[in-house]
Image (cartoon, rainbow, N blue to C red; front, side, top):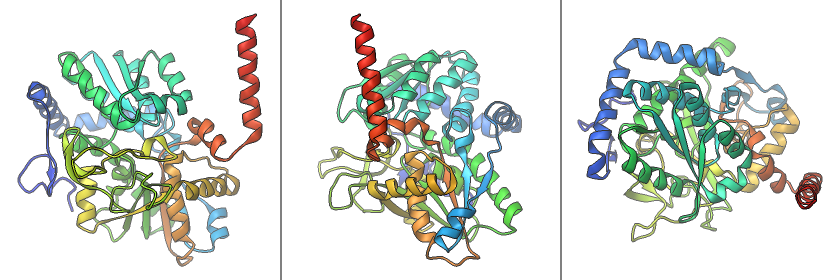
Amino acid sequence: MGLFDFAEGREGYYGKFGGTFLPEILHATIEELKACFRECKNDPSFWREYVELMQNYSGRPTPVTYLPNLSAKLGGAQIYVKREDLNHTGSHKVNNVIGQGLLCKRLGKTRVIAETGAGQHGFATATMAAKFGFDCTIYMGAVDVARQRPNVFWMENLGAEVVAVTDGQQTLKDAINEAMRDWVTNMADTHYVLGTACGPHPFPEMVSWFQSIVGLEAREQILAQTGKLPNKVFACVGGGSNAMGLFQGFLDDDVELVGCEAGGHGPESHQHASRLAYSDASLGVAQGYKTYFLQNEEGNMNETHSIAAGLDYIGVNPIMAYLWEQGRVRFEAATDDEVRDALRMVMSTEGLIPALESTHGFAKALQEAAKMDKDEIVLINMSGRGDKDIFTVADALDDNKWKHFISQKAAQYAQEKNS
């Protein structure tokens, strides 16, 4: 199956999903972007430059790591992890932003804007802007600014302006809306570095294309290490970029692909961000494209919840939605409690600290691996590292030592300020 060969004669559509639904004022800008992207895809030297830069700047290829302790503890399938946490800036997000940075240079733009939820995309975009010399503005929901302060610190020190969005639920969808408003106002010199494989065409295809480096590497690596393909591949799904990246390596193989959404407080709570696993989403058009959204009967977007800031998004990648309808990708949801338990197990058993987003994939993979045969293989995408989540994790794990430390530092700061 060629990933972008099922558009049914309409560019930017995957079955009934996708498209470009934008204000007329952005028509010329999006057409310019489409033309530049086609040019880059058809230019082998562009991909070579991209891969070389990722190798020399970000540290690719990232390894596939075998987890013998967890495999033995669970007594089932052999567990392997694709280590996107070892990228520069700590997640898979840098794959996309470096690619879009190169594209931005071709476009001749001098300023980049981005939205971010967990902060990893904002961190990566600020890093790319510093390297390429672009002005940079990052939009981030005020709620996410508070719970992802370490990434905000790095973005600002890399030279980016971080704008806390106070509209709506003050999370990722609101940050995207604000970035779109900026783009409409400043399109002449500004490129919108959309962070996930959503939004209007060509973003879903473009982001997926840059992230395909993950799956291409992983397929080659797992074959070299084990002599065979994995039985199941797991990745968390917010917008869907890390999952699209890994899954592309195995689309044409007899490998089960499992997307893991944010189950929040569970299906009956309505406090989650599961679009497909809980079947709570319906088809709609928002933020420039057509897909499944968590919305009410009037088309107004529902509030979402996840322990992981990067997964509480209302929509899902249109290519992924198509693959789900075709039965090629299975969707599951991990609750906040399951994520906490999985994080504790992975940290204490293997010494790995996955991001809370990535831990959703671990949670479902470990549950299923325990029921599989010992000669079977599971591959999980560790899309990011968990140091960014220290405040959220410490709170979730009710770590009293950490709370005491924070209280002491706050008291010390107040005393120094008043002295």
